[in-house]
Length: 141
Image 1 (cartoon, rainbow, N blue to C red):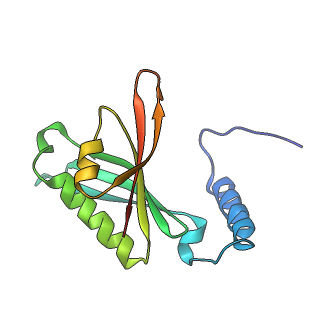
Image 2: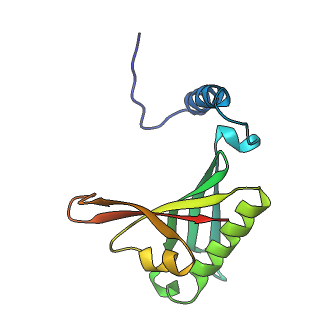
């Protein structure tokens, strides 16, 4: 037996793990289609020069979407761009038949923003990372 840690996993390594868990899970729940093996995507916003000034990174797991990252450059915050990105995310998720979007945010980040959009807190980890609180939020679609 050989155990190996890779900080730059290959497509073959990722595919083996994705297929392995999908095969196991299929024994216990209905297959939801192409996304059962994992699917990552981004939605970006660019300025007129073509520079990326914000965006989000998400993945699809079973029948829900996991919003991993949402970032807006400092000068674009408060202009409604974040809400527009989230609207595009929700439209995409609905078009793929997904039932929920989940995310995590820290106490100094965007909890009120997500709550304004209808996301509800379902978990809290205090002092994680040390000195801060992590909030877990979800929205049913």
